[in-house]
Image: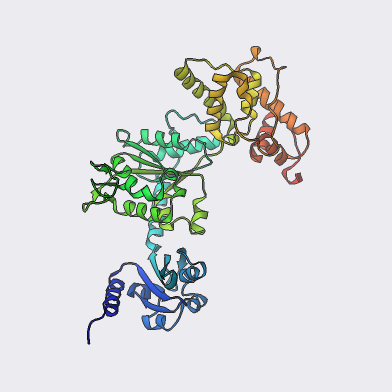
Amino acid sequence: MPTTVASIDSATLEVLFEASHDHLVLTDASGRILSASPSACAVYGLSMQALSESNVHALEAQGVFAPSVTRKVLASQHAEQVLQTTPTGRRVLAEAYPVRVDGRLVRVISRSRDLTDLEQEYAELQRQLDAQLREPEQPPTLEGIEASSPAMRRLVTLLARVAATRASIVLLGESGVGKTTLARQVHRQSERANGPFVEVNCAAIPETLFESEMFGYLPGAFSGAARQGKPGLLEQADGGTLFLDEIGELGLGMQSKLLKVLQDGMVMRLGDTRARQLDFRLIVATHQDLAREVEEGRFRLDLYYRLNVVPAWIPPLRERREEIPALVERQRARLKQRYGLDLSLDARQWGYLMSHAWPGNVRELENHLERLCLAGDTALAPSSPPTADPAPPPVLDELETDSLDLATALDTTERRLLERALAQGGGTRAIARRLGISQPSVVRKLAKYGLNAKRPDADE
């Protein structure tokens, strides 16, 4: 009997399924199982015969595929990813991809990888890290970072402790809170301080350029490549720290390629046949909720585990107004060095600085001070659209600042702002909305000045 292309393809597929370390399942357009790898049979607890006599809809109903990633592909017509718990007690990350011929979906191929050991490794790493970070007699600090609020002191203590370790760090928080500044300070206090600090804005790299920018390329690797080739950003971070800002903006394809580098510690330039060993410390940042991104299938769970060793949340500026005077002084010093100008602030300007909601956080504050330095009072207009229920900039001309030191002047200003907000009625939540701070901060500040408001549950 002559050998046909179909028989060759069938034999090739059989070898691929036998040799793969992933758990592979192939179905037709109706969800009927055509083939499965031995490892898939083992992890889902059914023989190949049992699988081939069923379909993904029935197996999902029986709890074998819980849930079925293939069924999701058949419904959505595009690639899907789910987290499953199998009948054998394993946790697996399952991905499925549609196979099309002439634009018509004809097959779905899925692969799943066992995360049970990775989850246990992650839990053990967290346990070891917690033991290492037990409260010392003298909490460490990050040089150059002022921390007046309790939340920032806890954050700085955490980052200072892990700076000397190899643990990956995820900096979480709104845009403009200072993630890059903290990442740089962690690098400066690490054992890699003499190595490079390579900052990459993931949102700024188009997906079509990701491989060439991150992995580099050899001369002539593709049309338009530089004649001398180029080392990628991953290589440039070797021996130092790689800071990936806005990691949540990476597409799933780019996430897979990054994960492989983190798993293997190797990178291969485009057009090369030789992998290069890399050694860098990874810090990432995002304003997104990565756990939710994982649940909704936009972020890989296995990459999440690789990255999320030390999560560190940076509170917005409106929840740590105690930091504003130190941030102002730091920016004033920068502006004097940059422009040779001294920025002088009166009571009215200080009142604005302390009461504004700062939706753009530290970055907005710094930009506002620069405009104020260059343009004078015209810069007192908000630098961003007003938030809901804004508090107007207070005019405290009656405050005699000449007879007060800065701390007393700020306390007096803060108390008067609270009294004004109290006079407008409502409970602590309403006051928090007016002042652009959290409700617990309002309660704490009212207690500080001996002021009273309705209980939180009295708010509408």
